[in-house]
Image (cartoon, rainbow over all chains, first blue to last red; front, side):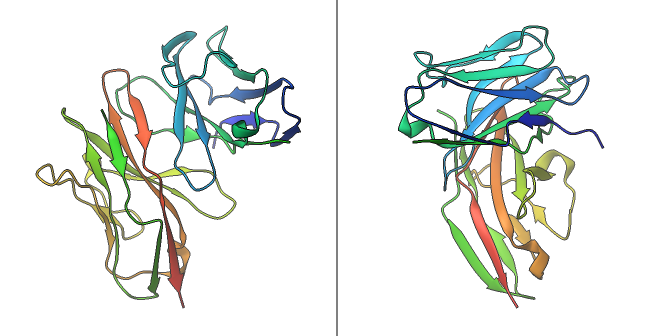
Length: 115
Length: 109
């Protein structure tokens, strides 16, 4: 079964450094989501793409976070500079985008630790 | 604003006992509701959705619009049900999806 791929699996960085996470959705999936999950909380939506276009980035801290999906396939989420409070699991999810409100397929996530 | 509330962080029941995981939502339109589950060392995955009116692994969930609830139920808990459970609300034509804070279900032998 096809899966959403994310890398790296773990990332340790010092505050003020730049970090980047990569996501490759299931082939053919038009909708891609980035979520942040702080320990003990549920996933929080950061950004949603439909193909290469941003549908919703209202919760993305744009002073330090950026996301792109240039060719409408894989996506990169960047943080610059990283802060201690950014330590969390970053999850990528995708769906076909063919119908509204369909199920999401999640990646394994990138666990970020900012020291 | 849209919101999903799961009031219990942890629910511990004995094997064979009934289980009910609570979920309440806030949304003025017609909601699409889901339960996602994360087993130990596995990815977050869909358990069931209200529109399908299905039973998965013995779990069911009924949408109660009057009480704005979508509680997850199972009559007889099994040890393999131990996991994190997240209630999710999907809304708008752009399929925006938000999650509750999750409930950890622990089944005692």
